[in-house]
Length: 66
Length: 200
Image (cartoon, rainbow over all chains, first blue to last red; front, side, top):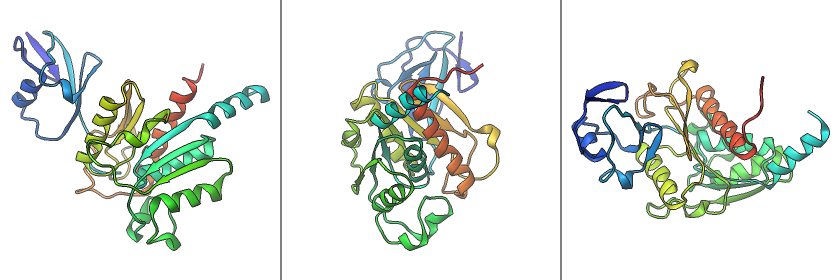
């Protein structure tokens, strides 16, 4: 029972939302989108979106500079 | 390529419109590349003026210091090529309405500077213009490390990034890497407009 978050294996928690996951990971940078098994989850959906056991999750953020 | 095929490509690019949010290192270089490639209409939004320190990587010249970036960029594009319509929009992108200037374009290029603004902008485009392709960039500071620059495709979001680059608060912004990533963004735009090229 684990998920892959940015290449790190972490325990899967049933019914956890993206928001709860981000809090658990202690991510402090401004989050752009979260990609779950290739599908974009927008910031407006973080509070409701959930994921399955074994999901490959990529948290995308942008770095200053342009 | 045969002349007829080439003419078809040129016509498609000439009919296309691309929005560019920010006319700094990414935006000015992407805009010039797209204009030279033959994109017919560019909507460029930025309210900054050219500063001398910008000249390490932005597509401006010494005699343009102090002028509005969008006006200077329009002038530079019009010096380089003919037949490109440039909408130079000297306005600040206001949170809550950031996507509005880009409603009518085919593709949006995120070419902003600050991480929070970049993030907010892309989120608003994804939310307010559903399905609109947006090409963002992240990690432009520094030099070298070419093998780290990658394209991530999360349609409709396309992200050109160097995940390990320093932020611009800690690193330096220099032409070779900034222009590489700006031109990669422009190259992704062409792919969106024309479809993937068939290669062996």
